[in-house]
Image (cartoon, rainbow, N blue to C red; front, side, top):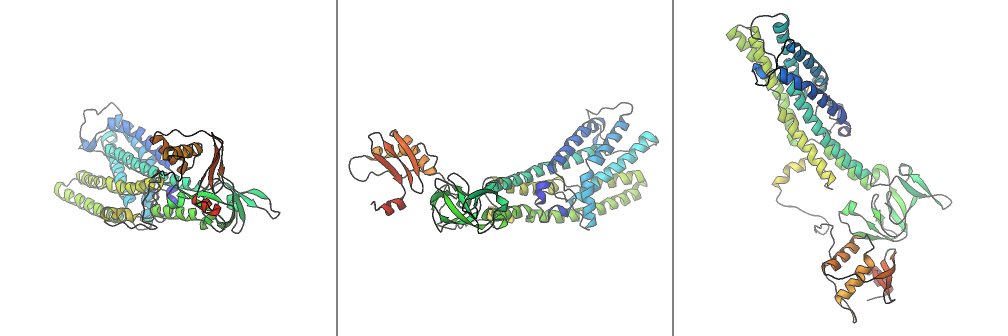
Length: 466
């Protein structure tokens, strides 16, 4: 997508619906950063050696030849720092859709051209009269716009990094069954639908598929948002990117590449990043009409001042002033920046925005409907109750055995049991020879030599244990 490589050609981030082919700033974020800092270095002496709108500032420095220094630095700044906006304006005008880039280009071009004219009249030809330049405004305008686009690009690249992190949920290779029955490591992009892959304990499922044999617990937080493991056996479906726990699964691949669940999720996020919000669409329209308004008012100002004063220089100064002031910094930066940043932050925190316009109506939402059971969880498991069934052991003694068996496990449920024992001041009972039982739980030997097993309800049913 265009936003991953740089700012969209019309000056916006990768949030454009048509990608980098749509405007004039398809640049990498590092290029924007380089142009900004180089322009900033050029801007500092320009600000010190010139003044805004002809005003004299307390910190303005002058010396013989300082006008020449400012003119040379401004020329370099205009050519290097202003180039992205000039290129973007050319593309907008080519499509006959003047917008933000055309406004910026209009401001910096007229400011530079008139400032050079004023410089020649004042310092080269030594002509009489007031010849005010706009080098100060030119420098600040270019630097501010570059800064805004660079910040926006970092936000867009942040969203791209979130997508990259999602892509990294899939392993680079898969253990694919060969014709002879053996398994070989194959790059993930070469895995085909219908092949059988083996997923060892602790590995990630490489692709969507159906379990043909084996039993295990699989963490599907990627899909459900809950860290609770789900028991998987023959006939069950698994999703690429989910985490296998303690068993070995043999999975027949049903979806790879763009057909996989994770790829579909990434596609939705990418589309959301590219979609324009209503505010962005409105800002584009406003920028287009503002361009026409700025040109019209500028020409009208020129004609009016020429008629009143009879001075071409004064009339030209007012027209250039209108063009410079007409560039709406906030309109061109704030709206796309907020939209790109909100999508980026959401993706990093697991909030997948399918339609960006949904963010705009969120403040007016008064009813929220949930699918599945309608239950919202934090993914943080807690022990609700401990009950010792039978005779011989109290609730705390049972909890001590459970904590002893589970304290070496990284399973979310195990962590909650250990935390419950700690909160109740129960010391875990010493356990030796503990080991995970695939698809069941964990077992070990207590200090008195008796065997202890933490099992799921399905195992109890299969063994006929009430």
